[in-house]
Image (tube, rainbow, N blue to C red; front, side, top):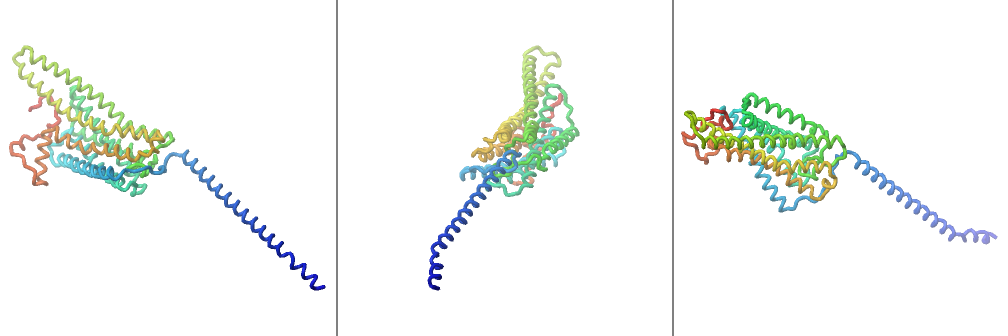
Length: 403
């Protein structure tokens, strides 16, 4: 009897095994569904976050596109180093000449020294950062330095544009309006006002308003794409201040100067062919000298204006396109385009001292006279050439100019 009761109890072992197997399968199935649900929830959260961030103003740069090839990177680094040295040394010499020589402190020379100071600071404080970023293809200086470098970049750029505008207006008043009212004291006041205005325009960048793009999208901190109207308004205002308005005003001034010079040349030619009175020869000679001297001085400013236009017009268009066009900013060639256009802008500070040396003989003589004190291999000027150097008369266009 006992055996008959114990035998049925041992029989259901296969049933227990099946039940336990089914329970384990149910647990595995529920765990699989739980993991799948969590993964779907994570994907949905990330998608929502990405869609939300795309609607906010641009503060994070998109994924970096392809950088520069090695040959192009080597060429750009060598060219950038040469431009940096030329801009820094050339503009430092201009500032040193005006500072050390009291005769050089005329009104126009003070303005040119202010322009040279802005270019030298741009070469010393901004170009090295861009050079390192082109080499490493990433920004290694931090967000605070990014904002500060952007503020300094636009400060020096706006100052250079303002100085060129002041010089062009002064040439227009002298040649067209026959008004020479720019004294050294007024030139100093105008230079100080231009620095203050440039600082007011660029200071919001150092405070993070508006936010900037940290490389690797570009070789320095630049404006990126944003749908924020305030962001776009600031970019447009800055572009108008540093390029569009100065370009339009300088173009108007130069067209007026060219028209006046052509009219004066025709009038002088007619007088030389007509009858001369007792005081005729002296008056005709003085008029010829005045027109020729004004033409040479104006040619220097016109070359500076041409270099300014060629170097900064593409960069202004590039900044507007990057702010308003998402396709342009997210394109694969954005870094390469940024590098070329940025160093085209940096080429202008390097060319300005060469223009002074090439166009202005008295500046060239004074420069050669100054250099042997530091570089003995340069030839010294003879004594009679030193006595003829009058740097204060480089840009003087008065009615009683003596040549």
